[in-house]
Length: 140
Image 1 (cartoon, rainbow, N blue to C red):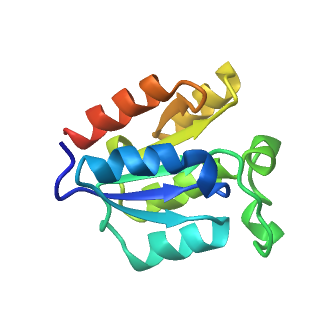
Image 2: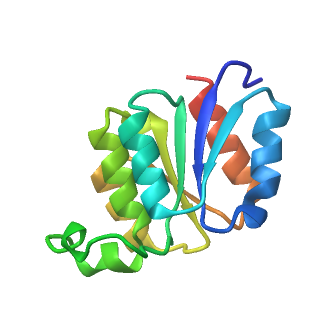
């Protein structure tokens, strides 16, 4: 199902998404797990267009990340730093159908901002929906 596909999975709580990693790997995908904002940013910068899909947890700690990265952004970006990683992915050449934000947050404001940035958004607490969304993006 995902043979030959490469997925960057960004989440600061790897055990919480172990099921997702297992799902992807059992389908044949190569999964690179990055547990921090900085590590994910490095992976995006070093591996431009390497991944078939970049999945990003919306709520990531930003320890060690300069405040200047958030200076010109609305407060929503400070609250949900995954939005900034999504922009970094888009700026690294990943198209809108290659970047997916996910979170337990289910608000119109987040969904609207994700659409404005040009990335997908899915609620994390709905595993079946998240799996279907990932499957549809990797099938493209």
